Image 1: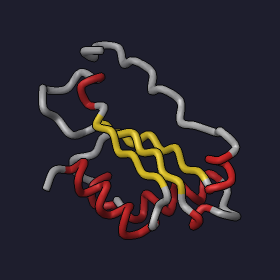
Image 2: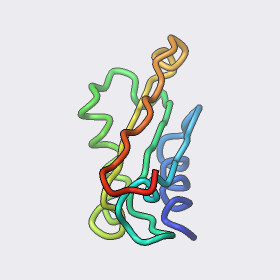
Image 3: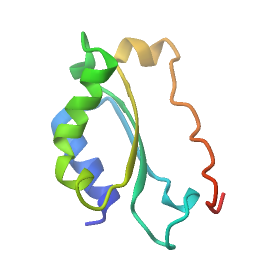
Image 4: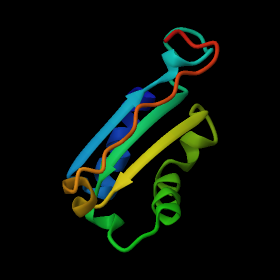
Amino acid sequence: MTVQETIKQRLSDSLTPLQLEVTNESFMHNVPAGSETHFKVTAVSQQFDGLRKVRRHQLVYGFLSDLLAGPVHALALHLFTPDEWQAGVGAPDSPKCHGGES
């Protein structure tokens, strides 16, 4: 299983998200081709209800702690409640990295 698939599976199992997108953005950075080091995660889950953004991030970091200690160098998190998502709050585009291919 790829790192991207592992992230998606763990978050699917842990958050029961209404929406989940895991994007490998490694190609945008100065890393070897085919790397799985930089990811963008957009998730919509009822588990985020009543949680501040920092707590939402901590929750996700807990599910992925071994990956963050190993192959994952960067993780951009965009975590929403269903109400926030329906209100049109969306994930911004990631900035281009100096030295990346994009």
